[in-house]
Amino acid sequence: MAQTPDYIIQSNGAPMRTLERPPGQTPRLTPVRPAPEAAATASQPASAPAARTGGRGQLRIGVILPVETSALGEAAAVVRSGVEAAAQVDQNAELYSVDASTDNVVQRYRAAVADGVNVVIGPLSRDAIAQLAPAVTVPTLALNSIGREVAPNPKLYSLSLIVEGEARQLAQLMRDDGRGNPMLVVGADALSQRLARAFADQWRKISGKDVLQRPFDGNDLPTLLAASGQADALALALDAPQAARLKAALTPDMPVYGTSQLNIGGSQPELAGVRFIDMPWFLMPDHPAVKRYPRPTTALTPQTERLYALGIDAYRLAVLLATARPGTAVKLDGVTGDLRLGRDRVFERQLPAGLMGGNALQ
Figure 1 (tube, helix red, strand yellow):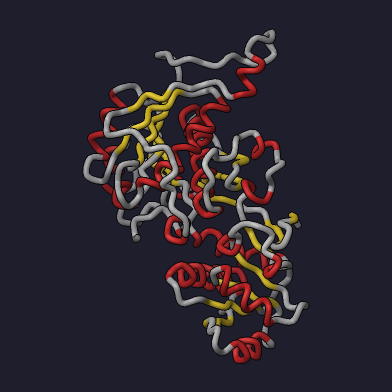
Figure 2: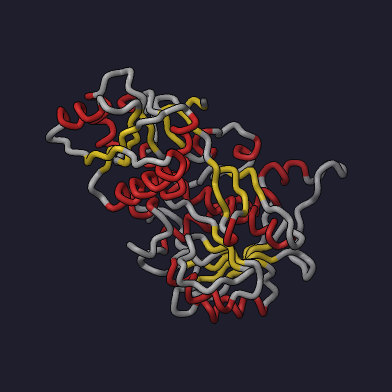
């Protein structure tokens, strides 16, 4: 699974087969259909703009994703559904959707640009990004991290949901909360190990010292609890069941922190009181920038619904990238977080914090 966009696909426990089957390899021109609200007000006087129709002067966004591949096809379909939902609401661009794998992404990209595409969303896998990077000629928003082996291209940007970004923010949150001696509890799976490495590196950077780390062993919780006596808070690089088991054994006064990895849906009373970070799509559903966009019409897991939210923000950023003047700061109050264009043309995400067992913002 090394090519997957992030941990979301790796940790998804439910299939997405109920999604509408994506189109085949032929490029698909997706007309922008009026959102329900727009349709209801279309006959009213000039207070609201009418839905824009396709035309030579309209912004065209190429959506180049591997919808027909076995490894990433379902994830790509969820991302694209988010892109299309945003397009229907915002009504300010025309979508040009193309299926492309690593083998043909350059060919499909060039054909889309030749057909008038002004900005591109995709690819999804790191291999496809590396393949495409030298050929990028219009603003292109890759939906994954860009490896150091990829030659820089001033028109290639990155938006991803990688767990390392959350781990770094979690370390900063704990530091801002006044925690000076946390203990990091680490699971044995690859995702938890990635999270732990990023947290430890960030903690060393902001505090000047190494973080105390202990592996999670469900068969030896007393040893873990004894070690926690040296800490003023716990940071969990664990999955939700492991976190729930540890939380039940802790004293109520021990502060506990985690990432969106713990938020698997529902009230989760067994994790009540855990301070965690997650995207506004889940923590701030009534925020104007969030409730503007429709929820998926097909039920998804919280993990895969994050990909839908990623598609919404990808569309909005694509519009900004296509219209921004050179040197202008690009930022967005996004459904996946506060997004700001940072170093190396990577969009940084700042996430809100909440409490498990109610998701109340703090």
